[in-house]
Structure formats: structure tokens, C-alpha cells
Length: 214
Image (tube, rainbow, N blue to C red; front, side, top):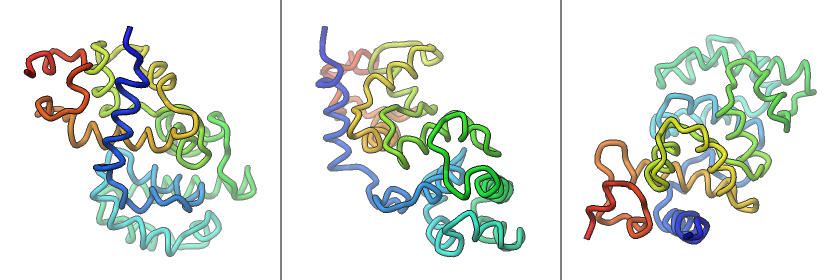
């Protein structure tokens, strides 16, 4: 049996080092857990390109839960109106209120604490744990699910994909690996036009599409 660390994890990380979206502002190493949380809320069902323009000025104005709670709702809504999803302002406001009331303004490090926050589901909680606290797990969205289901020839709806993603995630590079899978799925293993001919995983990928590559 082929080693998935060698055939999948290492090539995806290598591809990401050369081709990843390293300039996205929420991926900067010095982002605080709260700044990561805000990014993950804004990214829910929204493209990274759309969020990029609104994130930096938003965080510059509201870098902490205290700053959010002290602000007028209209001001917060105006700063993310360009995303077309003003409801996120409510998510951020209510999360900030809960952080102050329950955790002295700190972002909780446990999944149970995160999913109790308003607007935070399982995927967002996992993303925060990975990128803010270095948890050695993975977060599976539609893009990651597609990538893993194709490479390992699994049904997209398979319940084992999350467990597989967790097992693949390198404990010391979980954040980078998560970004690598997201970027690879967005740029190479796309939903409609996967780049199988030039894909660095094609020789070991079990997807029917890759089997046609000479």
C-alpha cells in the first residue's frame, strides 16, 4: 500500500509552498485568535477574494471583542457591507459579547466552547483550532471533501473523509496543510475542470479522471 504521507501530504505541501495564496491577510503568522475567528466568520460561504478587501480595515478598527462590543451596529455592518452578507455583523457582535461574558475576552481552545458561540459551526470551530492554536486536525468543507474523495476514490458523502483528513494532517504543520488543501482544490482539483494533466498527484490519484492521463 502506498504511503499517503508521501503520495498526498508531502506533494500538496510542496505545491503550496510554490503556488499557495500566501498573501491572504488572515494567514499572517502574527494574527491573534480573535482575528482568526473574525476571518473564519467572514469566510463562511464567501470567497477569499471577496473577504480580502474587507478584512484588513475591519480588523484595524475592531481588533478585539471589546472594540466590537463598544461599536455601533451600523458601523460594523457598513464595514462588511461589500461582502453582501450583513448578517455576519450580528455573528461577530454576539460572538464578541459571549467571549467577554464567558471567557474574559479570550477565544476558547476547546471545540465545545467554540461551537457554543453564535454563528460558529463545526467547520469554523475546527478552522479556528487549527489556525489559532495549532491543533493537529483538519477542517473539511466542500473543496477539501472533493479533493480527498477523488484522490482516495471515496464517495463524496463518505463519513470517513473527516477522520481521514485528521489522520493525514501533520501535527506540526496542520495550519499550512489546511491552507494547502484549500488552495490545491481551488486551483488544481477544481469542481468542474480539474487540471489532471498537470496535477502533481496524478500518478497516485485514484480518481477516474486521473486514470485517463498519459
